[in-house]
Length: 236
Length: 197
Image (cartoon, rainbow over all chains, first blue to last red; front, top):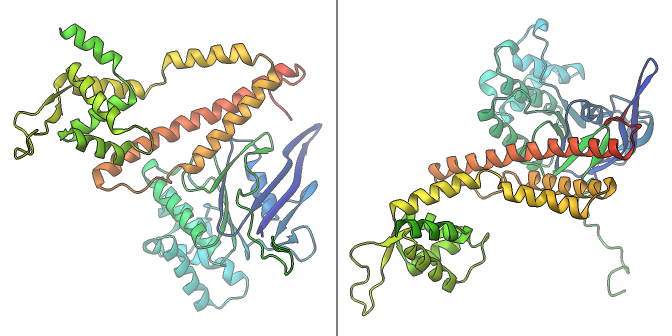
C-alpha cells in the first residue's frame, strides 16, 4: 500500500489580479522505502509540491493522504512526527550548537533534555555529522548544513522525508556522498520525496514538474503485492 | 600505403573495432583472449560472436592499427597463437575516435532534424515525441548511479567521469525538453506566449 498518495492535487496562488496555478491536477503515489526525485526548474511548483505534501499548505482541489489519512481532516497533522521536512537553514541567532538545534523538535514535544540530546546525537551520527555536534551552525559547510537539516528531520523518526533540492549549493565532489546518504535512508525503509534542479543519482523513480504539471511515472511500476483473499486465487 | 591504411582505418571505425582496439591497448592479447575479454567488458552492450571478433582483428591488422607482438605464446603448440598489440597509428586513431564520440555526431543531428521535418510537422505530434523523449530521459536519470561499483580506484575515477558527463548531458536534454514544450504549446495556441499562468 502506498504510504503517500496525492490525488488530483491543485494549488493556486493569487497576487492582486494575477492568479498562478502552482500545481495542476497532480497525482502521485509513494511507497515506504521508495525514493522519488522530482526534477524541475525554479517556479515549476516543486516547493509547493513538498509543502502541500507536508500539510503546510492547504490544497484548492484534491487530497493528500498519508498512510490512508487525508491530511486535511482534523487531527491528521503529522508534520514533524511522521513526516520530516528537511530545511538546511539554521537560525544561528538562537545560539547553541548543532546538537541543540537538532534536539529542538523533541524538546518542543516535551521530551526530557537528556533523551532529546541522545536522540539528536544519534541523528547526527546517522548523517555522519557527529564531528560537528558541538559546532555553531555558521561553522558548517553547505553540504554539512544539508546533512544537519536531514538529522533535524530524522530526530522524530519520520516515515516520510521531504527534501527540497538537497544538492543545491553543494560542491560537486561532496554531492555523491550526500546522495548516498539519501539512498541509504530509503533503504532503511523511509519514503523519500525530493525535488531537484539537476539530474541526480539514487532515485527509484524520477518525475518532471513544469508549470505545475507532474509528468512521468506517478505510480510505481511494481504494484504492491496484496495477499489474495481466500477463495479468490487463480484456481478459484 | 600509409594513406591507404588511414583510409582503411576510417572505414573500420565501428564500435566493435574500437572496443577490440581498446582491449589490445589495455593489454596485448591473442585472439581467443581478445574475444573472452570482449565478452566480459562489452558483451552486455555489443552482441558479437567470436568469428566476428577474429574478422575485426584481421581488419585491424590490415589497417595497421594492431600488430603481432614479436615472440609467440604457447610455443609447445603446433600452431602457436600470435598476440596482438596496438600500433602508434591504432592508439592515435582510438584516442581520436573517443574524443569524437564524446561529441554529438553532426550528421546524426541533421538526420534527426530531417526525420522530424518529414514525419512530424504538426505541434501535437511533436509534443507527443517530446513527451516520449522526456520519459526516456527521466528513466535514464533513475538509472544514474545504478552501475556496479568499480573494481579499482583507477576505474572508479574513469567511471565517475563518464557518469558525470552523462548526467550533464541529461541535464541539458531535460532543459531543452522544457523549452521545446513551451515553444510548441505557444505555436499551437498563439494566445499563450510560451508560458502559462
